[in-house]
Image (cartoon, rainbow, N blue to C red; front, side, top):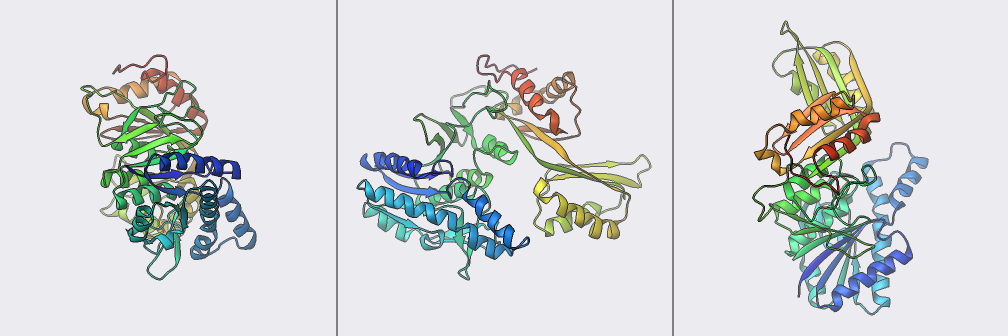
Length: 415
């Protein structure tokens, strides 16, 4: 007998028929003798509907009230799934995040899990019940409902698996695994049997929507076996492992990630003095805005610098306001240039550690397609470039072929 935590996303529970199908899938595992904890998202489109309702009433609602509102979506799903399981003879109990004891900090809409009380969960599991838990939510020390950010149900699932020391956390979604890139952009993309935690972290951080980055971080930190599977068809999915085994030479590139949710900002002719980067980025960080790529170019005379960085498009206008109203008056400098018509394309692969020439090949392929590179960022297993958004799909398809990732011509070529 194994203990599985199974997470089903919004499309997997998007209708009554799909909720019934999830119940049947869960029953099959329970009939095999396994203990099952199910984590579910709100029904597809429900969170957006609730946010739309809020915007019709108040265009600037408090984060606390938004958490109270959007957390109701998951509450509907857990009760319906528990009912569906009971209907087919499976003992089941539903819990909100607060009821199951998911304690978080008080950062509304972006809360982080601090502790999970598993006593009630274990009692129900030992009593033969399937436990159905609302993803995406928890409760702070003052009893306020909190949410973990969009995609937070993945984090709930992996965190519960870690707390319960589950045999596997299974993420069910509308795709049958992790692909070399998005098949909707590149028809030659192929499913990966395994991918390392490191690679999955990079892919998640770079815009891959298969898993939320915090969920992968949990899996890596607590050594939770994590598998991505399809809700709608049987198959092995993709297993996310700590590191590749029995593979003397890892593939050069495992996947290509991309993200159009990027905006670039540049402060021109900023004084080149110690601490200027902190003065620019500090007020932005204080507003809980995450910075991604950063490039600083010092002028020939050494007195000024052009400081460029990227943020999420959702933070674009707020960042512009902070720079204009706070940073420029205190730091000095010239004009602010801003562009939100950009995209980031990234190569990811642990094989980069032992291969040279990846960057030069990437730049050559893009140049041959007439694609100009605006910014570059690298890590040990990743190379990212910022390009005009209109060239994103062309860049992905060209790089996918050039690095031997196409389904019919898998290759480990290096240059």
